[in-house]
Length: 185
Image (tube, rainbow, N blue to C red; front, side):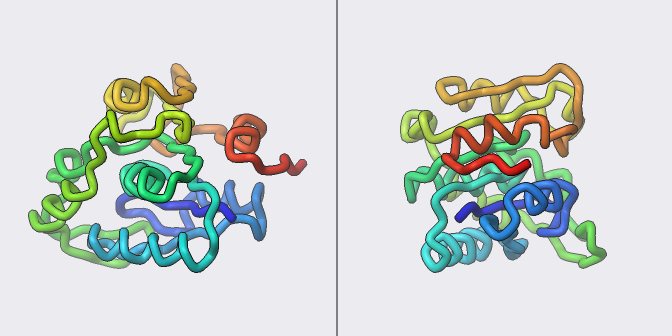
């Protein structure tokens, strides 16, 4: 089973989620994790154990969570424009926020501190477990930071695109090959 972990202020019904569900059908679980980082990690660990997850696909903040979980559980992981330092980059969202489905929540400094507890040092990464998909035109996160962080893993960098990674479906063959799934047409 594959676990998809969505990003900050998105949901399991995001654009990327829908594309992945269409591809992987019943082989993927679209997790709706809690907003608070410590609760998100607890929830995602429970899903990994109960659903016998063998690989992870994650985007943005979900990529940060996936890095921690991949390291802890030794899982093949696809990261799509991942957040490397969300305890820094999400500071701009301190205060009231709204998710894509209209749910409001308050992002607090304590959440930034919780995120820091899940940081994995680069030398602890099993780089063979990571395939990173980056688009240079990501207006939310600087692709160079993720490129540097995961440089020993498999990395694909495209010139254009956006934060949500345009035309993800063009890469399903390499994604499936990396995580050991059969390709569907």
